[in-house]
Length: 380
Image 1 (cartoon, rainbow, N blue to C red):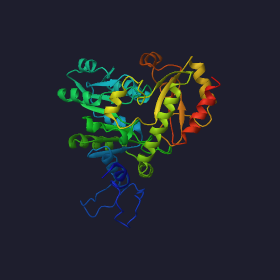
Image 2: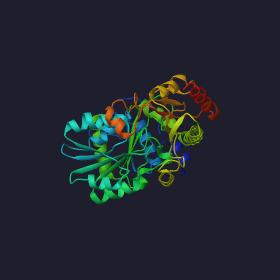
Image 3: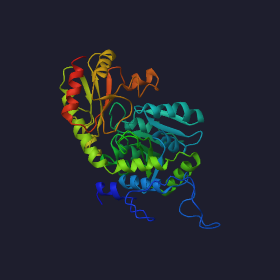
Image 4: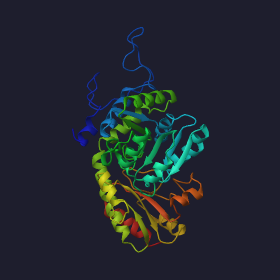
């Protein structure tokens, strides 16, 4: 079946109890046994729930994987993946990524005895040099947040497999509609389902999809042991959002690319960081690795932080807020918002500057969004 069909039907047949066409919300904590030592398919909602299973099966299908796991937040998904590591293990993390991931690695995982090393994974030779005998995981994110760099997932996966190292890709920015890391050799595809997969800015969630049954068993154990699973009602909301993922991603992608092309020609814009532009240094890799570019990108205003703040203060349709991937357009300042948890010197070294702005382009009419940016730039 095609993606659009699977988004609506995978894991979501009519409910066997009463034939409900939409997946019911099994808002229960526990399930009756059929008899002594006769457990049914579910026993306790932390361990499994019919609504959650429908979501997990659907996301797994969309990612081209065999096993899906739904979590309470994107960070809960990350925490569960990192729980696969033990004290003394070594993890390689791309040095340009979401600030919350950086915080989790530096303030939590490293404190528990895991050796965390940040490496520029666009440089495959640097990756090869960084791998140690005790390296257990390579953590990637592409496109990166907020600098929109692209990592060569197939090359990274090939290097990792020769060393017996697991790989993970945060696929939040492109969603399964535009990019499938598992098909490129990555072991774990991770999402903040808060973003494009849900798409309506009304629930937080996370997901991991894998193909290997042994790895799936380990993730299932940790999901249950840590209690990081997603609640039934939240799973229902994400399932509702998934049904329109394909049509939304087409609109996000189309609008964002048109706005990026417009911004690139504006006299008050220093640069536009969008992989769909031929000016992007990894444009060819983006075309080869993914089927689209998503709806989120960044740009730099000429001048500095003051000029960026004036733009942020004068937009009317774009909402000044963190997060991304909703039907509404958002705008934010990574230096003081999403990446504030990173030390100042780390932000600067990565290339995050005071004049950098990230936008999540929604599905409004593109003419209205451009008009909003144009009137705001007039005040910069």
